[in-house]
Amino acid sequence: MTKSLQIFKSAFTSIYPELNEKEWEYLSNNCQQLQVPAKSVIIEEHKIQKHLFFLTSGLVRGYYTDKNGEEITIRFINNNGWVTHYSALILNKTSNYIFQTLEPSEIIALPYSIVQKGYDKFKGLEKVGRLIAERVLITLQERIEGFQFLTAEERYLAFIENYPELFNRVSLSHLSTYLGIKRQSLTRIRKKLLTR
Image 1 (cartoon, helix red, strand yellow):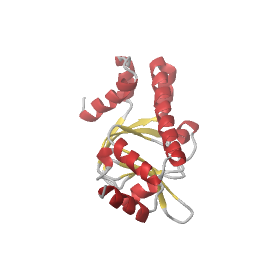
Image 2: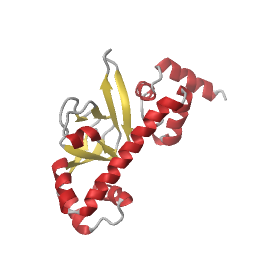
Image 3: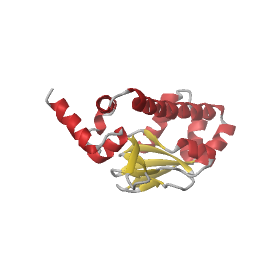
Image 4: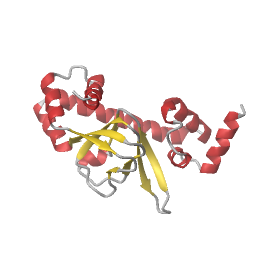
């Protein structure tokens, strides 16, 4: 088994330790391992997503372009993360977002049709799907509440605390749009924190 497949299997067993060999065989036989260069688009805006993607190494950014032509980052996906516009995937709708690699990345692609058949075939996989959806929902809720209840500085500090491995891997421009802070304001916040 390749390192990427071992990481992929661990992602399933971390949320569903009861994953059995038949379930794993079904998943592993139907997925594709991809070596993806930096700046490659994984999910296109206004297109229907046909695969559930899992990042085993590298870095991916999810974003959209607003009315003024500015790219707004909605998510960074680091090693061992799901790359998906989940609601669009499960509703078979076009994605509102672009997901693009920021670094050379290794990705597992699993056709969503296989996932759906797996739900019917294996009760355990149905549970895995629910647990993944719950994690996506929690991440989304935390992001919304960050904008509702935290100041710009608090959002920045929370990002550093929650994603210390990303601090030097994402550009200031991408980070500022992710945090909802103007780049100049983010620079001031960083300088202020350095002087403390």
